[in-house]
Length: 586
Image (tube, rainbow, N blue to C red; front, side):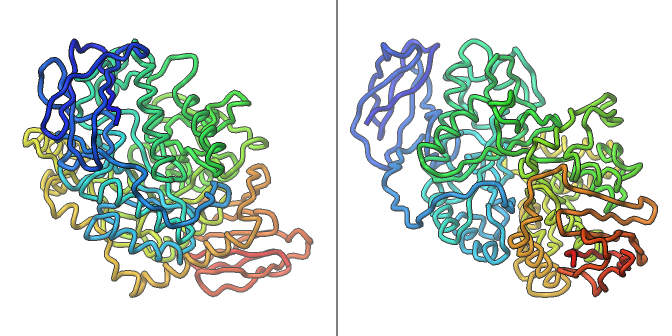
């Protein structure tokens, strides 16, 4: 077996394999690389010794059985026998479901999560979007402080556990997307700086020195990230990657890393004969992120649309703090703008940022499925002081309206786990740092952050307290009782409708037509022969929908949260309070 490592600044490198140390040789064909041939079997422990220093885990380790600071373990990628036949599944027509392995079940493992995949197949979602699974210190955490970017968190079930999860999902017709973090690594267990210039002081980020994408040595750093990304898709048969905070990737090279990644993934998809997707989280409101490379864009396949979320959240809750301030004056107007133009900030002034923000979308040339729409995500719940979901404060009717806008809107819809039944369990920020000083720093930093917004320190959940993670686990008895069961049935109905009504997966943003009344708190839009209306007010609303395409008014009710009559011949729809309806033209 060939062992290899990039360590350009080392004078000597040794391979410690099953307790025995042997010298490695410089690779004459690759600057900075060291290699050694040795007999090894699946599970054998190994690490590298640089200049007679301590044993360090392999930067490209596929398994860290004892955590990020322990030795690596050999993984035989060919040993797993795949069972499901799988041809892949692309994003057009998709419904995403964001899932955190550690809290989807009390057990917090791939095996326990896989046992609940039947729920998702029955719900009708098409893609499970896993939050990060790279190793991090301790047992429980969000995953965004992961290290060892080629490995799988051992407490979740390690590499084989992930393969069995993906296999089970594919067997049920579910694609799997994995959240990967390229913009920073965790503060604990990160040994990459010992090996080479993986980070650079040329740029600074909220996490310190930037990942080195454009300074000296960045060719190998890019290759490290590309190899990790392609490995997830190839070796674990994943269907896509969600790229965390791509706006934080500092990169001044003529060929941006994201464009290089996009081309590499498209090439791999052609080789494998199945679709692969890259979904960006971006704060830039820049349509070039998902514009094809042939048209001068980066070529990613979709991007999260926070503008739609912020507008919808503000319309539902009335909140106006932080970035919601940009949407608070006329939230339904903002919702209407996003469902027709994708971004609210398309070169408009942002009071939150104190400057103009965003770039217009060419709606005539941008497919709507390239934008992901949602009412809740791990970020938008977990970064609240108490991790409270919409269900903590909104009525079932308003939750149903949110579902209607997400699942009948033009974007690729995404749900956050438990949203489909209005879960009352919070999803809070939790960590399991093994370094006491780091644990205290995280705990106190969170308290200071929310103290600035008027929260008492004692009110903020302690991230290190196991009870914080425990509170964040889904309660699987909820879907069996009201009001959760009714909301769950509503989500199933809307997803089923989306699957059979072609107008709901129409990628043409330019064809969406909207009407709304800010003061009366209703909004309606047309998608082909379908009309959707939501009433967020606490009293009934009369909504002038106008005539159908046949100009005779009326219409047929396809789905309604509360009993509602079809529109009158003059096009007037009488919609109950906090309710919504999907109509088809006669």
